[in-house]
Image (cartoon, rainbow, N blue to C red; front, side, top):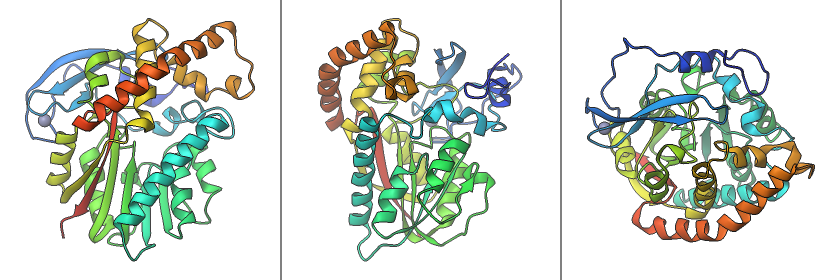
Length: 341
Ligand SMILES: [Zn+2]
C-alpha cells in the first residue's frame, strides 16, 4: 500500500511507479537516440520506498527505470511536497528563494531588450519567479500540477493559471516571448514533448530557459544514489549540460548561455547528501525545513541535532559548491536557448 504523504489516501501515481513491469522495453535515449542502458542502481525516497534508475551508455542521461503514469501527479505534489504552512519554507528561506527568483527575472529582462513582454512559466510552484516578473511589468501565464502550490501562485495574479501538466492543458501557440521551465523538466515524464510544446508556444526567435539538477556535477558523482537530487519518484530524468544541450537542439532550440548559479541549490545539495550518506533518513533535513515544526520553533531533540549538524556541514558545502561550479559541474544549472525560427 502506497499512501500519499499529504492526504493519507492511496496514491495511484506511487502505485503505478512502484509496480515492476518486467515486459517493458526501454525506449531509445531522448537526448542522443542511443539504445544501450547501463548501471542500474537503486535510490530511496523519504518514505523508504526503493526505485531503480538507469543511465544512457552514450550520453549519461539518467532515467527512472519504471513505467511512469502521470495519473495522480497532483497528489504526488500535494501539500507535503510544497510545505505545510502558508508558504513552502520558513520566512528566512523564502526570502533567499525570492532573491534567486529576482536574479533570474533580472537576467531574463537583460536578455530581452525592449520588453516587458509575455512569458509562460511551466510548473510555477508557489509563484515566486512569476511574482518577480509581474513586478517588472511582464504579462505572465503559468501552469502547476500541485493544487496547494497553484492556490498560492493564483493569489499573485488575476490571470487564470492552468492546473495540470503542460501537455494536458490548452495554451496559445506562437504568442510568448519567453517560456521558463525552472526545476521542472526533471519531473515531467515526457520532457521531449514538453520542449516541443514550449517551441510551439514561443514567437519566432523566442527565449527558452531551463534549469535542472546536474547529473554531471561533483556532488552527483560523489553521492550517487544518496545525492539529494536523486529524488524518486519526483525526478524522472536527470540531465548533464551536454545531454540537455543535445535534447534542446533536437527540438528546435539553439542553447547560447550556461549559468551555474552555484549558491542557489549547491550548498544545500551537499549538506543533505552528506546527511543521507551518514545514515539519516533520506532527505529528512529537507522535510524538516518544509515542516510547520520549524516555523513554530517546536523541534524535537533529534531535529535540533539535525539543525546543529547542518550548521557544521554548511561551510565546507558552500566551499565545495563554489569549487565545482566553474567547470560546468555545479549541483544545478540553467540553460538559455533561442527558438531556431
Ligand atoms: Zn543518451
